[in-house]
Image (tube, rainbow, N blue to C red):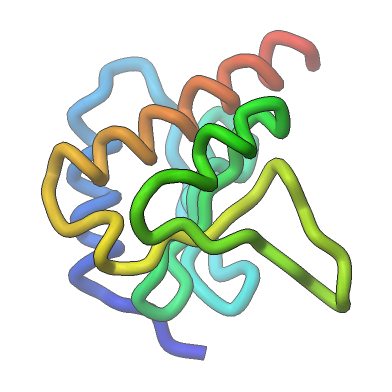
Length: 112
């Protein structure tokens, strides 16, 4: 499955500006995943951003423009979601979503 190269570049450039992150890119989930400090953080899937976030924030994040709940094999996942292009048009929108993913990434890193 193809992924949006321009969106992947935007994610890559955003993450590269943050000091202290260990970033690995890996083909996963039919797209390009960005692992941060050894944990899957965010993924570019087609034209969408697949985000991993704290499941307790699901209801809040589901209200944001472009959010689509992640459903795989009929099962809903509250700690994951897709953001369609209309929800990541601006750099500010992208920063919100990546920041949300990074917050959870740090939280699960601390638990490891």
